[in-house]
Length: 133
Image (cartoon, rainbow, N blue to C red; front, side, top):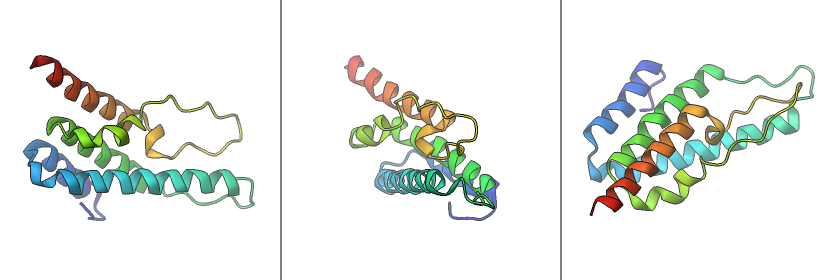
């Protein structure tokens, strides 16, 4: 998953989702938490430095790879029904605040639409399974 080649990095996360091996759940949760924290810190840093000239450089390609990995990893937790991941997944639920013209881009993973959708799916999957029993 740490490959610098985006298809390899995302493909390995996809494989973890497809395999859904329970022994990988804790490591997956740790990776999601680390990326959520890292991207939130970057988002906050952009708010502080956006008006500098020149403006800060943002690795959008790297962020896109991280978001795509997170989509797969979040769905893996839902498929594995990892209840302890609920608090982290719920952090993806609130609608992000609107940003004005001239504001920095929202780069935190918790604001990314596809990561948020994956968290909603995972939480729904866990809840649906609770109601089936």
